[in-house]
Length: 214
Ligand code: CTP
Image 1 (cartoon, protein in one colour):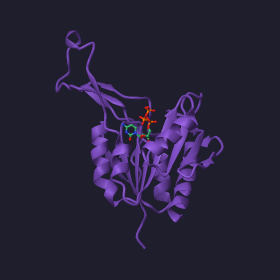
Image 2 (tube, rainbow, N blue to C red; image 1 turned 30 degrees about the vertical axis):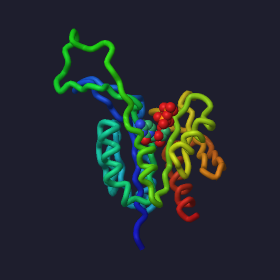
Image 3 (cartoon, rainbow, N blue to C red; image 1 turned 135 degrees about the horizontal axis):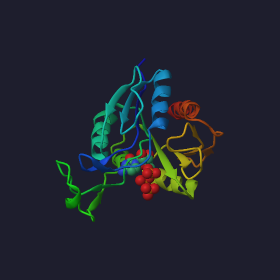
Image 4 (tube, rainbow, N blue to C red; image 1 turned 30 degrees about the horizontal axis):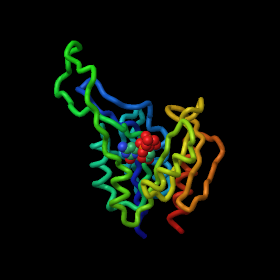
């Protein structure tokens, strides 16, 4: 039987002004890293597209390291057509500088009002290229978590979205613990208890496995 192929993104993208300065966010990639591990342990052929993260490569998982949102988009587009599942847990920077200097810009020459532009929305782009793949998004919110998650689920044509409240202390970015709600396209919401990211990653993989069987 053919192995299920699962593409996962994790970590933060970095949008550079010059080689030593960038726009990014506090994600360490822990949640996505554990999802990749759980996917591999579940017997799935796993590819992890990894932005900035201090975490090591996982044995048996194909890892593609990327820097910017554009790099992540291109890496995902090269793998997506051959995948059964995409789990988009990366924290993609929403904006980037319009201009990037090749060499370090000296302090006195720094543009104090740099022009920014939006990065490509990777999930939205891939949702338009979707054939039979299952698409799982993440929604990191500080307020109205479920309402915003539902909005993203619909806008990005997802099968489900993992919502988490990043304003709560001791969970979310860089923490080992997380509290998530999985909102499905059929309107149902699955809310596992507060748990380690490692256990929640297994829960997410089991959940996706059930979606595959539907
Ligand atoms: N995402 C993406 N490309 C982007 C931004 C986000 O693929 N440029 C993905 C994220 O990986 C996540 C989902 O879209 O799976 C939602 O990301 P989030 O940052 O919560 O929402 P945004 O769509 O960026 O909207 P907003 O910042 O307004 O909440």
